[in-house]
Structures are given as C-alpha cells and as structure tokens.
Image 1 (cartoon, rainbow, N blue to C red):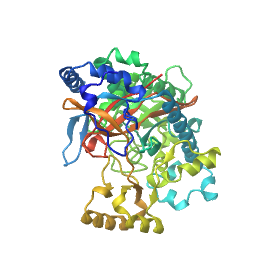
Image 2 (cartoon, helix red, strand yellow):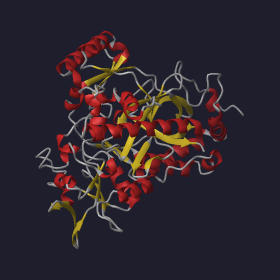
Image 3 (cartoon, one colour):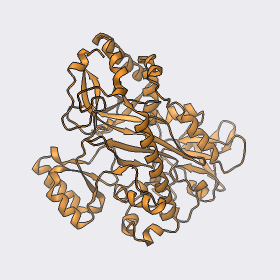
Image 4 (cartoon, rainbow, N blue to C red):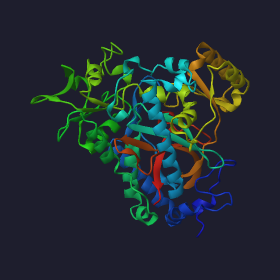
Length: 482
C-alpha cells in the first residue's frame, strides 16, 4: 500500500485504542481500502467533499438546537467524512451483547412493575428503585402488549485502551440520534459512491421499515390498517428534525398534543374529516409531560386522559411509560446482576466500573480520588452537569463536592475511561479524535433487531472526551463490514 501524505502525518494518541492504526504501526486490515482510496484524493478533492457534506446538511435542514445561553440556536450537526469501520466479528460480539442486555432490562421492567422478585431476593435495593423519579406507581400491575417495555433503545458503547467494549449508558426512554445515522449514510453514498460496495458495507436504511413493522404489530385493534402517529413536543424541541424525518420515512402522521383528544378512554386524532381513532403512539414526549391529569398538570405537550386510554389497553405507547427507571444511572450499576439473575448468563458487554455516591463508603473513596473520576448526575443527559476530575480545578472540585452532599443518591462516579480514537479529516490532514458508538435496537414481538451500524459521535476538540453535539461534538458514518 502506498503511504499517503495524510497517513504519514497521522499521529495516534499514546495509550489509546486507535480504530485505524494497530499497535504494530500498521493500518488495520479493515481500514486499508479506505486509506488507499483517500491516498489517491488530493486535499482539494477532500475539501470539496467536506463542503458538499456541509451544504447537504444545510439544504436538508439537518440541525440540532443548543439551549446553552438561554437562546435556542440551530446548528448544523458537524460531520466528519472519514467513516468509522467495524469488522463483522466485532459487530457480531456487540450485537449479541446488546440483545442479552436488553432482554434482561426488559425483564427487570416487567418485574419491578409486577412481582418485584429482584427486590425481594436482595439483588437490587428497594430504595434505589423507589427514589428514582422515573419509577411510576401509575404503571404498577399494568400489562403492556407482549410484555415489551423498551421497543426502541440506543446503547452507548465505548472502547478502552485494550479495545474492550464497555456500555457507558442505556438510553431507554426516548433515545435520539437515529436520523443522523440514516442521514450520515445518505451523505456518504454521495461522497464515496463506489467505495461502499467495494468494502461490503452493510445497510442501515431498513431501520424505519423494521420500526414501522413493530409498531403495526402493537395495534390493540385487529384491523388491516391501524392508525400510527408520532407524537412530538413540537418545533422547538432539539430533536424536531428527527421527528419529522422518522414520520416521513415510515409514512405516519406527525402530531402534537393539541392534535389528539381522548374520548371514552380512546385516543382520537383531529382531521379535516372528523376524529380518527389512534391505535399506536410512538411518543417523543417525556413521561412527566404526557398526561396533565396524571403527571405534570401544567404540561401543554401531552394529551389529557391518555393514561386512562393506555391503562384500558385501547392505545399502545412506544416506549412504554415508566421505562426511565431502567436507564437511571444509579440502576445501571445493577445491570450485570440483572443479566445473571434473569438469564443465568455472564454479561457479554461489561459495565464501566461505577460508584453509587448514595453509598457512604463509595462516596468517601470517590472524594479521595476525584481528580481521576468523571462524576455524573443519575438523570442528567447531553453531557451537562458533569465533573471531569482530570480537567477540573481545586475550586471546581470543592464546589462539586458540596453539590453532591446535598443529594448523594443523584450522583455516580466512574474512572476516566480512555475512549478509543478514529481518524478525522481536519485542515487537510488526518487527526485522531475520541469517539463512542450508539447502536439502535428495535424490540418487537418477533425479537430484537439491530441495524448494522449506529451513530458514531466524535469529540472534535483536541484532547476532549465529550462527544455530545450540545458540547461541540460531531458524528461520522459507521460502516459494519459484511
């Protein structure tokens, strides 16, 4: 293989797993074709591809909203043109691990809303469950179709310095980002049309079809053409682009709370020809805003009475209400125990070692080692409210300790895991940047299906470990090889 100017200058980060570059200073076999292809392109060609990607994102309105300074600012989702490549055997391992984990998490949700065997047997402490704001007593003893609570999930994976995959967190409430996975692939097809088939890259475009098939199967009415809607909080939501994309690709109505009404424990959509009964709701509205009669009385986003229709079995809601208890970061600690308890198997994918700060001994240990820890709120998201111990000043650490002591149960700490790095095209050269991976799993009556790929998020700032788009991260296309 001819060495390229880009490749010569590539400088892997010491002590970090590099997705492209092996320990023996050679390109990993599965990256070889891409590097050969890029080597033949001039910097001018690659810059044109980068510009084309930006203009395609802009023209299609592929944006997200940042609420940092109190203003909602729409930004293009930064996209890196060099794909992240995963081998068939790596993917088989990840897929098997995610299926195992989701099976156990689903059994856990069914159990804690019914018999609570896992609590009675002392595997998960009762106070961890009951102190979780997402454990909803309204769901107790409520039967959900096919006993599936988590129909859609995005499991965040990272790789340590030896290449081991770890689960960073389970997103089980209203996981977002799948539209970027789909759009990244569409844009890559435009940039490298002949490279995808040459490398044998597996397709991700079946995602909306599989999701639609699963939604159809949940209809409580046995009719040939059930009414499915996607319930969005509306145009000001940061993921609104995704809501419109998924509704369009599945061919279902995009609605807001004001478009729906409940009558006689049934949900109806207002249409120009009158009311039309709704069978399945794929909701992107959080639990607390879903029904002002049951949860937050001031919510303008939900539908009054929807919980009554759900309880009667007249409408299916995806994901099930109350699933947030299983992705609380304090409950995450117990997922390996759940896998052993419900499935009698050893976990395939490891958890990142995690300290629950509600436990006094663990808190004492973490306080002594805060400069080596990442501390997160158990129900935070988007990378907000975290303490990166290695980068924090003494004053920041002291202030954060005071914050933790106000409510220790609401915090966990993890050692700073060294995320793997992948090459990114920046200013005419390839540079390593830290990445994670969010594959999307769909759980339907026929089992769990995972499209081969996912959203690879990139920390675009040099030295940064934070990949969230709201914190300056971007993404790249994820290729799983056949």
